[in-house]
Image (cartoon, rainbow, N blue to C red):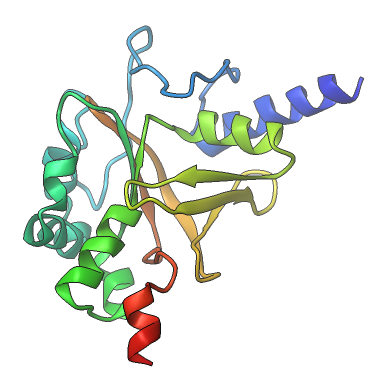
Length: 200
């Protein structure tokens, strides 16, 4: 009975998170691209996000993500997003980067890798995993440390970084041929490095 109630909640919330997303399906550790449904992507700042383009092509078209794109390129982290792989990217807006402040190039590279997760995790996948893990789950990033995902109310997924800061996903499920983009309202930061501790 309890399991049925949880499954019912998960399915209902998934419908609300990404629009008409349908029933929650089983999650593979590296979910496959959406090939059996017609993909309707949200727009970002009035710009179309096309599902047959790669992550870097789509996010580069967004006027809200020029800082994110430039930092990915300047640090060399953009090369991580290979067209043959599958990645989930938590993409902060220009306003989020302005609030976070600048970093050294080494620190910036860690920051950029921390916002990329290997594997393809849309809102349905995240919701299902959060529910199965009892309300909170960890995602291992390309940087090597974890981002925590949990629910904030029935339909909103919140991310918490290793410094205890939280970010809301403001645009879910921008599907790309090599992954998923979720737009977030805050820059996620990895934990304090040994070098940062030594300099204090």
